[in-house]
Length: 300
Ligand code: COA
Ligand code: MG
Image 1 (cartoon, protein in one colour):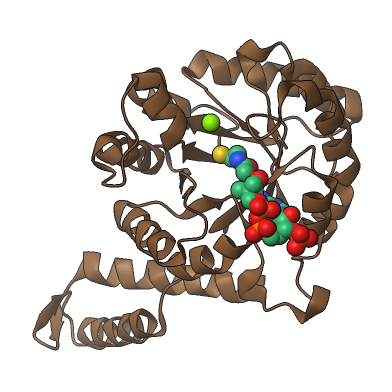
Image 2 (cartoon, protein in one colour):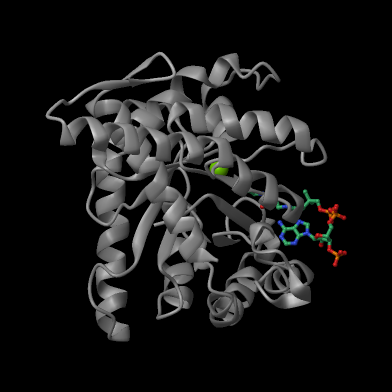
C-alpha cells in the first residue's frame, strides 16, 4: 500500500472535512501530488471532550465522501482507556474504511482487544472479518519496548510513531533538535520492518515551516519510514515529494539494474558502475525503488 502522506482532519470541524474533500484529484484541477494518500478523520486528541459525540457523528457522515476521493480512509478513534472507543467503532465500521487508527496502544493485548471489537462489528455489518486493518500509534514508553509484538499482531498493516505523546509520557522536553526521539523513532521503524508493516512518522507541528518539514520528512525516510502524518493541507505535497523517489534516484536505479542484468548475462553476480560495486543487495534496493515509483505512477 502507498501511504506517503496521511492528513489528519479534526472530526468536529465541518469546514475542515469539506476542505479535505476539496483536496481530491480533479477537484479545482488539483495536482495529484497535493493529494494525500490517506485521510485520518480524527475523534481523538484534535477533538475537545465536549465535542466527542459531535465528532463521532460528523466523521461517520463524511466517510463515504472521503472514500470517494480515492484516498484511503483511516479514522482515528479514542483510545482503549477513554470509555469512548466502542461507540466510536459502532459509528464508523462499514464499507468506507480500510483502516482504523488507535492512539496510545501499549501492548499486543491492546491490539487483540481492538481486533475483537472489530470482529463483532464486521460480523454485524456483513463485512468479511479482518477487512479493517489497524494502524496503532506507538507513543508511550510501553509501546516502544513492545514495538515488535504490536507491529506483528494480526490486522496491523502500518504503525505510526507519535513524538508529542511519547515525550509527554516520558515527562521529558520536546526539543527542536529531536535528540530525545532519535531512539524511539528508529525503534518504531525497525520494529515495523521486522514485522513486515509500514512505518509512518510523527506529524511535524511547526506547520508554517515547510523547509523544516521537508528536512524532517527526509530524515524519517532515511530511517526507514514510508510515510508521514500531516496536520495541515500545505504539508501534503512536501511529504509526498519526500517519500517519492527523485528523478535522479530513478535514473540511477535503472542504470544499476541494466548493469547488473548485463553482468548476469555474462555469468557474474557483481559488476561496477561509476566506480561503485553493483551486487545483489545494491540491485535489490534499485528494484525496490523502481517498484515504489510504479506504485506512485499507479496512484496517478
Ligand atoms: N484538514 C483539513 N483542512 C484544514 C486542516 C486539516 N488538518 N488544517 C487547516 N485546514 C484548512 C483551514 O480550515 C483553512 O480552510 P479555509 O481556507 O476554508 O479557511 C485552510 O485549511 C488554511 O488553514 P490555515 O488558516 O492555514 O490554518 P488554521 O489556523 O485554520 O489551522 C491548525 C491550523 C493547526 C489549527 C489546523 O491545521 C489543525 O487543526 N490541524 C489538525 C491538528 C490535528 O489533527 N492534531 C491531531 C493530530 S496529532
Ligand atoms: Mg497521540
